[in-house]
Image (cartoon, rainbow, N blue to C red):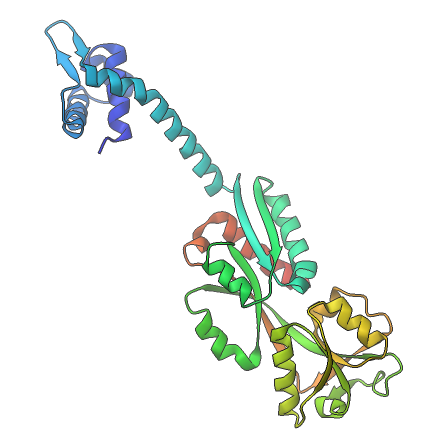
Length: 301
């Protein structure tokens, strides 16, 4: 294998015409130059220099290597500078995937701070709910996934994510949402069993499963009349008096609940918001900085 350091020595010898002059230019000893040239000729499998008493000339193979050396070394220098820029957060790219209520609450603050601190780092954002967002991370389609799991499925979630780096971000409590004229609209807190006879409006598939689990623990099966992945649609349906819902606080924060009131529900249920990445990616400075800013954004939420 031809090494870049050997090419630098060959180029210096070709330019100066001797080992001693090349050594002075490179800041090393003449024996060191001689050893480097022997190693390069061994790698090339052919002589590269014709050594004479008064002069040193390149063989045909040596001329070929010198001709290519400038381009190779220039490309290597450019690559080293680009990598150094990424390592120093003067450049870099992070592909982020987030669930919708995280995109509208945590992500904007985090990315604004990241851009202010590291303007050379570019971040792209697409939306996906878990488990699809987790699949995207494992398939190499993103670098960081902002995701969530519910307390009831935490053990299962830990097994699902045991090959990933998990950064806890926020505990997001579920709150009840009822129409303004509802009998419980002014209540300080509401037991889930008190909503047993209501029409329900459910959210995303994972939230829907959690709703059924919570209701069944309270002794009833919810009658789900409407189901939608769109949180503003859930709020709109509740505001129109078409039913009640249980939504995460982040989802409520991202929507103005016109015609609806929030109430605390008992027993308390939380979903855990986390940022996920792969172990190797966690060592990339731009990815680590993104995780840090997501954590800071949650602290101010």
